[in-house]
Length: 271
Image 1: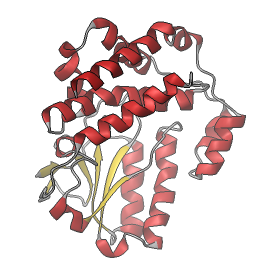
Image 2 (image 1 turned 180 degrees about the horizontal axis):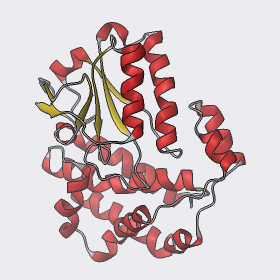
Image 3 (image 1 turned 180 degrees about the vertical axis):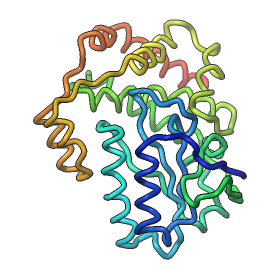
């Protein structure tokens, strides 16, 4: 698989490249970005999706831990509400690639950050058939439990995580049904016609909120959320919550949750 060089101008990319070259260039086979950052489709909702291909001898190293901590400062500056860290695999895993962890279809739309090259060739061998159904049912069970427990997001951090879970369902559904991975952005059109309007409504509402995303952080919240310490960030979210705008709350009505239930029921009948 050939992966081309990232040629955008996002500052977060430049900072990670500089950090890697200055201090950590010996521990990686490659650093790759995927998702909206790689395809130059960044909007205010966008988070940072990056894959580290780590040389095996550094997988449990202090160097890798320091890189993650230092690079997360730049990533959280890009998206203070980022709810996940780096994806990672070891160099040896390329010969037994974990397809269910990050499908090859995602890598086909990715870009290389490091090393600096017009493109790199990465040979990937998938020896074990992935269980796509496991990822799908793990996700819809999480969502179903939230509905059953009458859970609702209380702040923008929780809302982003919740919406991201919902918008991943079409991708997971496609993979489970067709036994192959798909790029998340392409999955919506690929499966939309399978569902009735009332089942698909929850996806449309989640997408609408995504497109209107504009969290209002005060200077103290923003400064605090730039910190990569997870416990500290949890405390910030709890004690200095970022309020959900009324226009979003109005969309998260009974129809939204009823549609989510119908979507889950439809998938469970089919898969």
